[in-house]
Length: 424
Image (cartoon, rainbow, N blue to C red; front, side, top):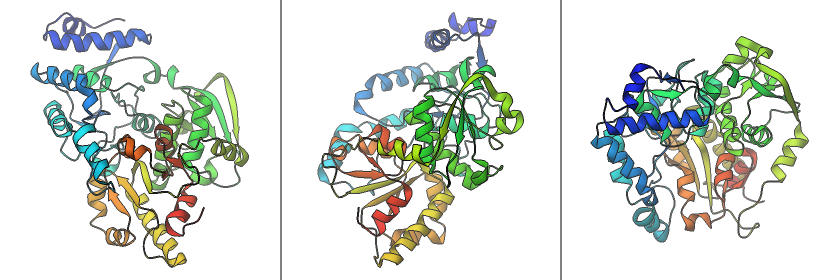
């Protein structure tokens, strides 16, 4: 890797031992992936993935303190993934004891470290930092130092920014140094599609299910997706962005996709079209039967597969403002049709703090509350890490939550029916 004189000087210790270690970490990381140089991080803000004060993460807390003590703080303010705790989310005495006294006992002190390192504000906790209300939406062409997989794939694909699928801690390293290694999705060649995915469904496929199928097929490769224009059109409006948010999160968690192109819709696909497809690209055809096959092969992790669900999570990644409104209307309609006054399964909608605050100013907030649904800002994954919660029959329409926990996947229509009308 070729370094500039300034970069070499930092590596040699011109800014102190800790800054030198930060630079060495980035150089070693880049060399492992064949990077030719370091390039400047150009986004206004950064985003960190490590938001939770999990006691077992003591080495991370020690590292953060070393950075703080040496004055090696982020050159950008940053948002961070969701908080793991919210007293409003259903949990019994023992579950709360494990959450507060065992698992996340260091949450408060860790958040103090984040503030010293450059946290944007005390409410900058979400996996969907790019939502308008959160104020951390990168511009097209921005070079990022992010690690949250669902945010990385959204920034690359929908916003046209450039970011690799970094690991946690590498995100803050890049932000402290102001540089990231130049390889993979930062390069023109690395952004070319090595798969052509032809969607041939009769109806608009569920975002989470389509993303899952593509992610499991192409893994870490870049897909170029055709056949979606009949449902998504050619404009990135709020509805399409919400769809792509959930779709991308599924490709990134069920596989390892960091970038996708959708014909005539995503920025680079609109600009370059088929020129984005690499020579020798493989083909994958998705129809309704293929989506059904994928869904039917999901493992059921519940101890009793026939158990009645005890909890439902909707919003992983966090719901957008429009999704909150749409879900509120759908739940109201389902309850009216069934004659039930409140949801039949304890249900939690999760969203970004700033979105939650804006939503609570609308008429829909009281209407949602009347249905019995809880609105929260937490990370459902962090909730499900509790062994007592893991043992519960929890359902979700999030393929990310299904992949990383014991939660069981149902389509949005199935979830709506179960929480408003009951039955299998």
